[in-house]
Length: 439
Image (tube, rainbow, N blue to C red):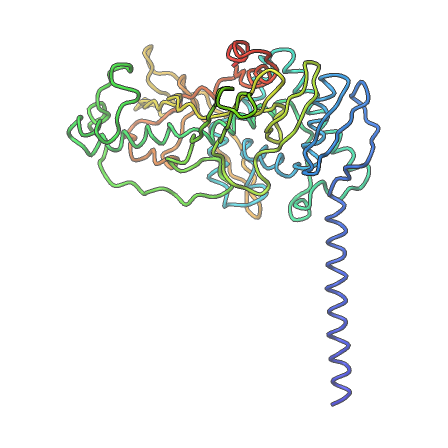
């Protein structure tokens, strides 16, 4: 009995030591991924000394000898603290989440590939103004400088999460930042769901006045083009109950109807402020997450200091203040998404009807690689109005007539998107009139 007890004690102690050793090893490896804010680095692609001062909340205050170096340092700081978040945002807009998470994100990847936001971002780089191109390039250089430090100094894998998932990180490109802006536009847009709902209600309500009661025209019926009821346009569409909303995956950038695009802002004049200054409060109504989507930072540029909320991956203060003005980010509820019902050629489903006759779709194959599964090849199609979306997305099947498909027209699908230039221009404006002009 005593012999068995001694061996049982040895086994328990041995297991405890193994667990302790494993815990110490995990802690050591994970801690190597955490940045040392007191370290100094000798880096290329900067023109002078740069100092990143962290306050007691670890908010970076960036002091540089040129604006380019300041944007470089912002990219460096973003990568130090949020590289996992940045990579996940990039994967989401590229439609590559399934490479990490398997089939659970396949539907999201299919949508992102069909919208083609990343390739549109690549094309949009060329149309940015010169100072924005310089900021994007400097920012990307800063992100890549930190990635080089990770590899050179064996600093873990850049973030503890990369011990659980692949640690392959492609170099950051200027287009990546524009793509994340487009991803944020998708997260803040709910007009497509409203288009579908209005068509669905039109199909089941015979009285057009009842439709206006339930879904009023905005802002009023005198300011928009008069359109016939959807049911009158397509009387052959089946009228049946929809499948209902699909369960929302936290990794999906698409929010349920009613939860996209909410935000608010308040301003108080100096006469109503105890300190005698203008007050601006802004709540963009973005999701809670860990880490948070926002990242506070201060940039000392040639024109003066700018401080406020950034989003990792984007080289701009999106909501904040400068020595000249303050600004916020709210949803405008602009109806900038429209659905077009494209009639297919009965003799050739690869063509659709235009005012000039039938025309072939623009097509391209796209391969989605899926963790623990075989790849999926999508056939992407575009009409003159935009990308063709399948009936499985946004419940489009419930409003699509036989022999037709649905195309999405949306301002964010432009290859000449200058939103990034507007963001950079607004944060650098020295008057309200200039900020409005830049935006």
